[in-house]
Amino acid sequence: MMFQSYALFPHMNIAQNIAYGLKQEAISSAERRERVAEMMALVQIEKLATRKPHQLSGGQRQRVALARALAKQPKILLLDEPLGALDKKLRERTQFELVNLQERLGITFIIVTHDQEEAMTMSSRIALLHDGRVEQVDNPRRMYEFPATRYAANFIGSVNLFNGHVVEHENDMVVIHSEEAGGDLRVHHSQPLSIGMAVTVAVRPEKVAVTSEYENAPNNIRGIIQEIAYLGDVSIYHVDLPSGKRIQFTQPNVMALAEQPLTWGQEVSLKWHTHSCGVLTQ
Picture 1 (cartoon, one colour):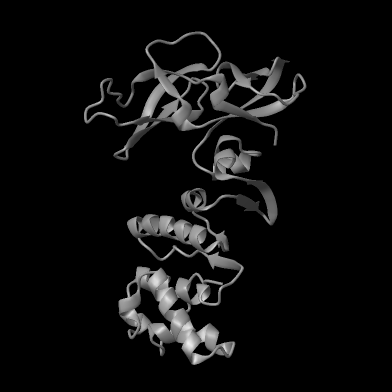
Picture 2 (tube, one colour; picture 1 turned 90 degrees about the vertical axis):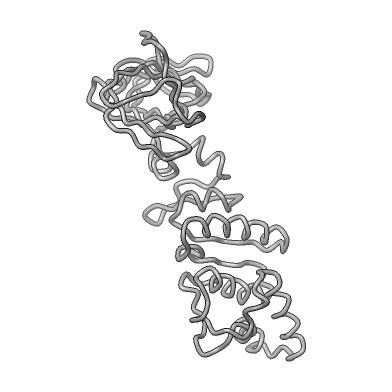
């Protein structure tokens, strides 16, 4: 196990910390030295062998804790919030390092995290827990694109949710009337749904596109921009619909100056494809 606080022994130097578990198993000193050297080389901390934990940065302590856990050559490694103490850039870099390390060693990593981005980046399979119950178990792409419940849709990334009821379902296409959206929404959905059934339509902000003019058609809505957040690579827009519901959409900042600048108080027409949204029944 790799602890969230790293739990390094303050009175031991780095080499002694890494060797501690091996010493408890009565492994010979020669093999301990070899294994410690191998682990330090693996996480690139060879020059830190004689330092104490208080002389290291957060990222270096994280590497020592990882090396100590890996030194025992476990079949399964449990990492409890392993990157929580690191700053954003170091955390992002370490995520990829851990993924590469896991692939090289072939050890199963079980990572406990509250960071959705960290879970998406590092995992091949995600188990989403809520109130002691498993909401969904899936790979990252399906967890994001096809959430099983409203909670899963809300927890992983941002999402727009429209409550409504089924008015038609034929040939893998379902029509849902939503007062919040101000009309009918069309969704590609293969599972059978009964007419009148209460459902929720989920649309990710990046799936929503700005159109030149409003059309009285399914999946086409209009509203007024109320909030704008510029994040560098993308901008996030919060839009109030005539029903009073607030939704959001994003646009990538491909050019330094947007070709069609959007501003506060501007009326916009928005739409999305029938394959770009999903139906939630719970």
